[in-house]
Length: 86
Image 1 (cartoon, rainbow, N blue to C red):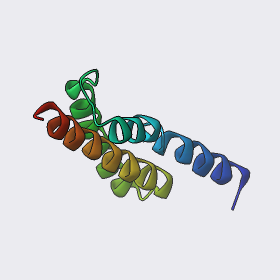
Image 2 (spheres, rainbow, N blue to C red; image 1 turned 90 degrees about the horizontal axis):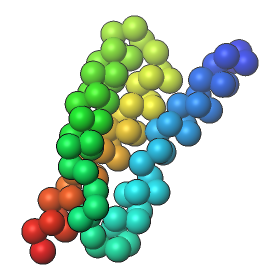
Image 3 (cartoon, rainbow, N blue to C red; image 1 turned 60 degrees about the vertical axis):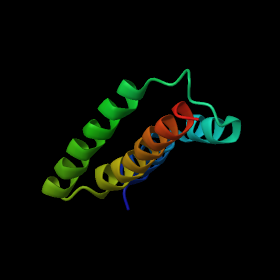
Image 4 (tube, helix red, strand yellow; image 1 turned 45 degrees about the vertical axis):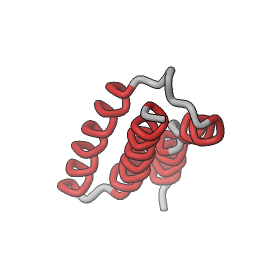
């Protein structure tokens, strides 16, 4: 593994968990009233496109990073719907 690979995976890991604090805060507080649904829908679509791109070029950093981001975006969308209707 090269230094560039290590840097790519490290950067990917940090990027992949960008939404984690928001997911945890929303889940813990059971409130998503100040969360933008549109932002997470845009992020969700964006992650799908990056994931497809990563598969097309066979780049595991892009694939793994965006797979995790896709899950985080999906969780936030679900939490937004769940807590907005309570």
